[in-house]
Amino acid sequence: TNLMQPEKKDFYKYLSCVMEPWDGPALVCFTDGIQFGATLDRNGLRPGRFYITKDQRLILASEVGVVDVRPEEVEFKGRLRPGKMLLVDFAEGRMIEDTELKMRYAKKKPYGEYLKKNSVELKDRLGPEPKSDFALIEELLEEELGSLEGKEVT
Image (tube, rainbow, N blue to C red; front, side, top):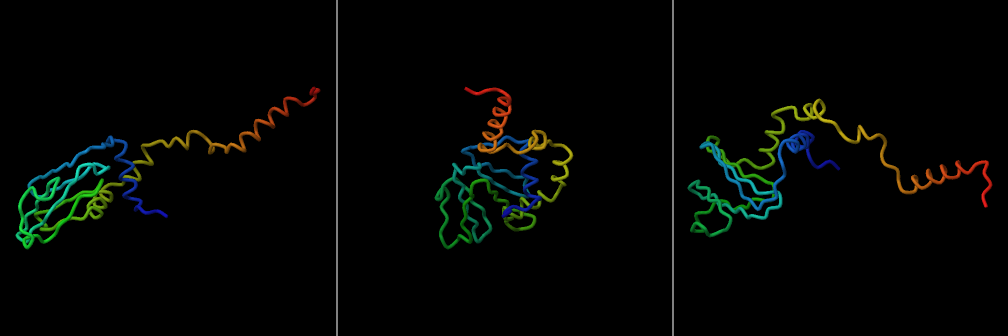
């Protein structure tokens, strides 16, 4: 089964050519004043927990309790997961889910076309699939037996 949309798969494959994987531990936060986002390393070694309060505050820290918030003030509690992102768009007044966010960028450019035009797959250059052990032994035996033709074996 193919669990990932082709556009998203192409997006990740393309970016893997221009960005090194990083294993953290890291919780990276960013903002442009209109949007605020955060992401974890792919292993999730650094926790990232957040609250959204009823008065529309976003509180994000590596541990719960860094900022005192009364339970009745909390509208939503969440935590970042490995490789996932949190994005709050203040202009839209909403939190954008990881899947929506990544598909937005995956569909923004024709990454599949970029890959077809600008990348080389080793499997296309190396010829047929490697032979199984059995097929390889069979081929070697045939070569050996062929080299013995017309010779007397003692």
